[in-house]
Amino acid sequence: MAYDALFGKADRYIEQKTALDSEFELFEEEEKKAADAGDFMESSDSELREAFLNIEHEFDYERRNLEEQKGQTEQTREGLSAEAGRELQKLKEVQRKLDHLSGKKYAESTERASEKCREYMDQMEEMLRTLGEDVSLGNGGRADDKRAEETDTDLCPHIKDQEEALPSLDRASAFSAHEQKLGAKFVRSMQEVLDQSRHEDVRNIYEIYGSRLTIAKAHHLGGAYYQHGKGVCINTAAIALGGLAQKPYQAAFHEFGHNIDYLMGDGEPISEKWGNGALYEALQQDFADLKGELTDWKLVLKMNAEAVKNRWSLKETLALSDMIESFTGISNPLGSGHGKNYWKNRLPCREFFAEVLDGAAANEGSYALLKQMFPRGVEVVHRIIGGEAG
Ligand SMILES: [Zn+2]
Image (cartoon, rainbow, N blue to C red; front, side, top):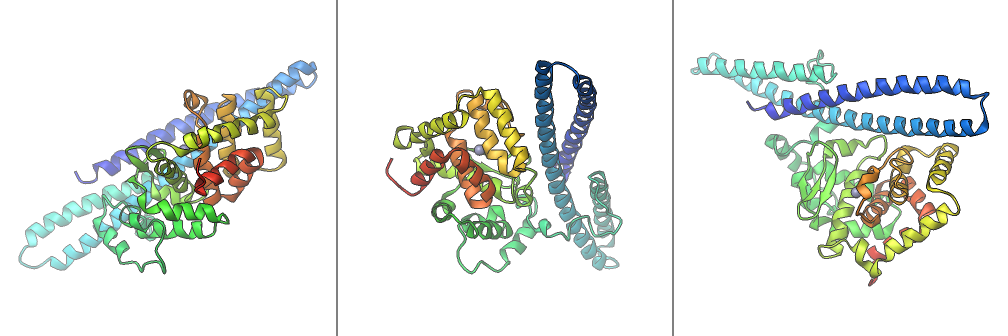
């Protein structure tokens, strides 16, 4: 039936949520045991205490990692709620129209349709309740929420029409060409974020390449990604909200950044080939400076201490953490990353390129931290997007 896909998504969400909840529970039990053991260590010898400090750090990373997953799951939930809310709203509209028909010539088939409609409405309300939404007000969950307008164009042709009727921006947006797929609101908001960026060259590069991006999926459930030959797969509803580790719209600027990397390099990432690998060389030098005489683990501990001292948020450290992970092979060193296996047979250049761009466009704090730790690398990215011959 028509809503199978949506209900399937909700089921998968519930499964993920349940698994994550029990993981959290287990983690907290272990964390408590470790804390108990820690109290014992107080009087112990210094080497043991130091080893114990490492355990504590590992627990910290794990917690941040779990918190981040929790944030992502919450985004999925909100996306699903919005979608179910919209569907419910449409069903109500259909119901209203059917009500007008009743009593006329086609009473019997009207009644049948109406019954079916009510059945679907019940199911939709049930789903919304499962997702933790309050449907008692009878307003269809979040259907009145402004997010509801960022709709799935594949599923909701009607709402797409409404979006097209929205007044256009005063001037062309960098992403107007994708308004059909991304939705007018999303395109407009992306432009508003971009307009606030203080980096002219970054604003320009999105303006120049915006229309040439390939949007493969705008309502993809699961992690956002870019694949050369396929395009950008994102979930606009979730990205508009941002998350624990990313600002609103930042993830779209990130995936668009990957796409621009390949567009600028005519099908190969310019971040890797420009200036005979100048970006990789710069990043290696930056990392060598950062590390100094420290071992990888000591560097990671030092960075964590800095993070605590300076109160860096996950939003600020996501990109930095990713780069440290790439160079040290230690997973999620500052609470986030791709996981160390991601970097086997991969240079850091493509991620760095996209991270500089997404930060400069939508998360100045992330950009500033990258610039502080990898200044040569950031400089090379600016030279690449500035059009300097490499
Ligand atoms: Zn990426």
